[in-house]
Amino acid sequence: DDRFFASKIKLLKKRQDGYYELELRNSNLIIELGNNSNINQKLKKFKAFFAKATHDQILDDFSRVNLAFENQVVCTKRI
Image (cartoon, rainbow, N blue to C red; front, side, top):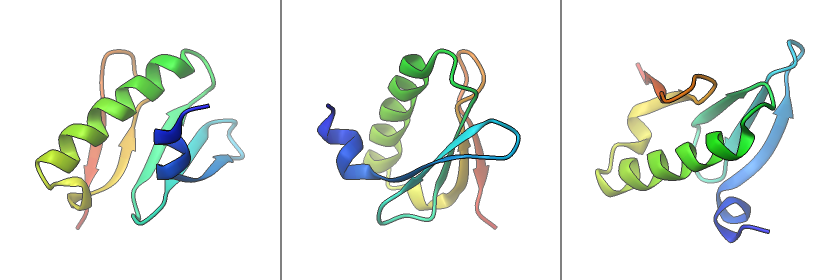
């Protein structure tokens, strides 16, 4: 039970390709998790990204954040 995720995540969705996505409350940002391997590591990366992006006030600059890659957070800027 994690209050951070309960307060931030609106929806967990499994796509047709078997990969998972999170939709956030109060944001149009889509978080791509990939498959369900290393899920705890991916969620830790999301927390760190969210804290930094919120602090720098750049969260709304992005449309997607991909956490599927090991040791990387890949962001897509909003156009």
